[in-house]
Length: 390
Image (cartoon, helix red, strand yellow):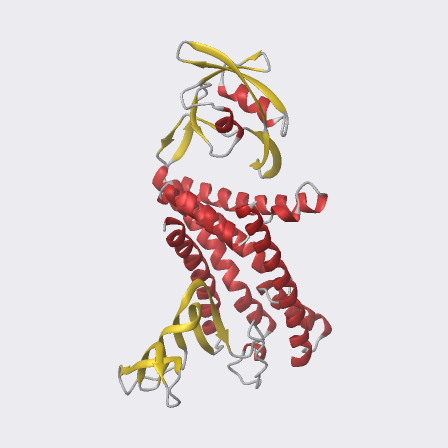
């Protein structure tokens, strides 16, 4: 149950913030928004802005005139003032709470709707800069959300100040240290027979040997003994650069130092940049062959991780949300048709060739992009299922 509500919260917030960016940007340049939906169809509740006020509708199954059960409005009520001028925008709450979308006039999006009339309130009738602003606003909102979350967490928690004593304070689940039987409170005396005096000695040694066997001498109470294990590799951002380091899943003692707003903002900025750095490094590892396409996760992995971090508390969940927000922003800005970056690429191409692409050409480009994205989605879901049952 924790996994379910954590997934709904994380994806619901991220997608809603993203789509709100598109919505407000579209309205700011006079683009008509036909629908703003939280969740995917079928619709459950709608609020439509009309000239006479608001039309409220509730959807469910009902028996139609052919005596068949169909999904449709079972309750409708008008509220508001007759003097009100409506925008005809339909605000929806839909049943599948794992996404959302904004349907703007004059766009060829995932629906592949080519009903474009080139009126003044359509996106394609706006200037290239206005179009780019609308299409990039969702990504901008996700970056801002990550920054706000990281900064807020830093202000609330403070800055961690680490103890250099070589004593294990926490163990990371499913990492070599836990699997080998290390415990919280164990003191590390030596690594491969080299004496350890402080935690920085441990970090320096283990970080330098990813995927390497190591012998660790432990003191537990009055007992001293050796434990053998093999380090794993993990990505880390150091001085703005992403690197591959060795790790066994142990965490040192630390305490939090209160900070002011200026330092919290600085910390949030650095954390946001580091979040994108991790993504770039992951892609670089795929290109170099250091990682496999099978390592890429999808919605099932996100749901699993959301459940795990939610059990660790709200701070962990908000940190996870900030990281996924960085991922969502990065993916959406890629110049792939079907994504925000793909729309921006088409706008740039039109600016270079100094003419608009035909609706038919745009439809073909969108279909190719959607096919590629569908293939990618199937791939990551297969990866998720393989990890789940493998």
